[in-house]
Image (cartoon, rainbow, N blue to C red; front, side, top):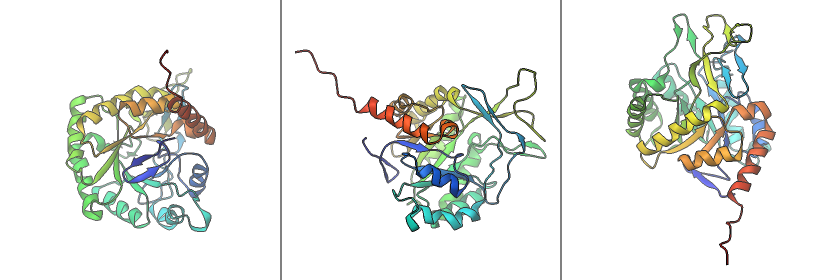
Length: 313
């Protein structure tokens, strides 16, 4: 396999494990034992969160719904544990795979503070999650920063003021159905070309809904209206469209990471051809763990390293 360079990190190949799969050090150790070239932990919030309680995940076959509500042990947990894995202390992470951290703040200052602390703990990179649709409060669903250029600018300004520009920093966006809105947000990110090294697309599609055969909601918990983020196979053409559009708008130095519906080597190749430098596997890894990564990479190698057909004599 040909190695790739992602924001200064040499990766053995372009297939990573994405955020949402590694919440604890046990999850991380399991991910590091797969052939993935890099792992994204989190998303991490400042304080620990139990997440939403109830029916928060539904596997619909060709799609999945989730409204987990960002369950995670919090920033302090990873501040204590992360460095051991990044630097390979005591035999941890013997292959020295890059470990990126996905962060979610509830104001721009939190994003900046968390980014600074995780960079200090030697995180290989930070993925600023601007697209989680599954946060609910007394007033209903909280705003999704991806769709608010003013919030995007404020968050990136805060991050830049905390750490400077010489780090592997990226953002993860929600999928846009309005191409003009996508252009506005992309151009906002482009204003931070010295800070932002990559853009990951896409997060789950917001506000999806499904019912069981008896009419009851698939997603149900206190305060919920049944809405959730959609992921899985159905997301692949949506996310490919985001990659294709963003590659034509963003400056060349900003790389793209594709995520959404990847479960085969052909899926990986499709994302790379659309303009991605690397991909992240989430739903398929959650469902099949190491077998997912093994099978995706075997097929990817078969597709990319088969000999060129010989011209007839």
